[in-house]
Image 1 (tube, one colour):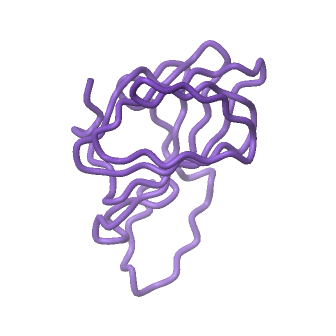
Image 2 (cartoon, helix red, strand yellow; image 1 turned 180 degrees about the horizontal axis):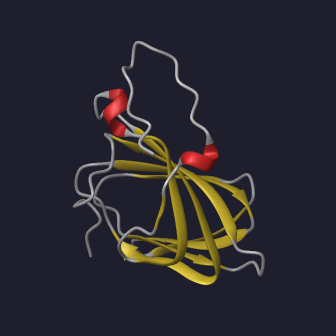
Length: 128
């Protein structure tokens, strides 16, 4: 189900109607678009993600969107260009345009996270 509605109207977004997908350059990942860019006139979008242990977001960057990642559960290693940080549940990271980033799951239970992209992430903006 697409959650495209007029931005002037409130909307309930039932979890069980969201289409799961795996983005390019990701393994062991299931995402759900909580808020599509079409709702916000492409100003931003919000994605819920789950990555299983052994899965990852392979190194990539975005040429048009900044990314804000908030880790809801689990632990992971995030590489930002040449710097690597360990994240735990509750941690967040802001990723500017052009910064190559990689997320490796380090907790056996996997991770869940929320991503906000501004402007809304386009399908062709996940670049190697």
